[in-house]
Length: 369
Image 1 (cartoon, rainbow, N blue to C red):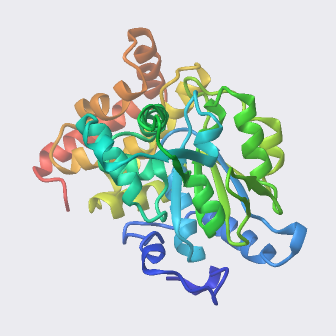
Image 2 (tube, rainbow, N blue to C red; image 1 turned 180 degrees about the vertical axis):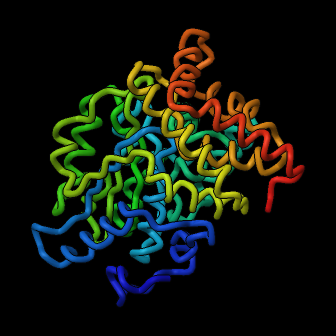
């Protein structure tokens, strides 16, 4: 771990917390954005009202937002966790939920999935959020876990008739990170419909903020860092709430990196080192990305497409054929839009370059030099 950016060197993490600190794989290459954010956060960490602890990463899918959020965990030496927002989130998804504890006799009468979920919640040690418990035990998405919590709340209430009821509070992942001092990635808060939910989130993101729980008031841990990641032009997304934006102290516009960085990352990810091929593939991705934007085509030509395309070519796939399956069809399958993308490649000489690379690959018979 690089000690240069450690924010709280005296802090002792538990074994469970240490396991949540992201460890950079050998393929990770620090970006300019990563170095800039780390330097700014470290410089302002002990400057009171000038502290930087709410960060916004806004860009297209595949631009490296989550990878960057995880890299901050590694650099700062703090546990990483995330929440993925969805349209119908309510306040219980922000703060957590209270469930009545039902007797073992009544528990055994429930359906298997409900019984498994309630048992797992009752046996949890509080280190993991309720949604996290359900996600792991039932193998469902965070959105499905939130819905399941509401169903369990109703179910548990129906099975406590005539008994003295004991209640237990299960915190959300947001509360856990907020209270324990983690790096929390909040993915796509701009899809949330309910303004009241956003207001609760806004309040929590104040540097001296707090969250009012049914059982207590939780103060923001001094090490808590919120990394808000949002996609541009994402289906169902709205402009990011102005109040939420105002609470951000540092923002990054996440676009494709430079061609040199793209090639470097592709080499590290795939182990493929033919620079001529990677250069042409990178140029193609860049032109497709610009063309899609200019023509309001919703799909994205990003780093993920580049990695998978390069890996396919390294594995022996046709350069031109795999272009469609790994890149173009991910952007669009509309015939007119595909024609626009093809014309853009031709006008920039990339159709010819791709043919040359294809010939080179076939002539060599093997892709890796």
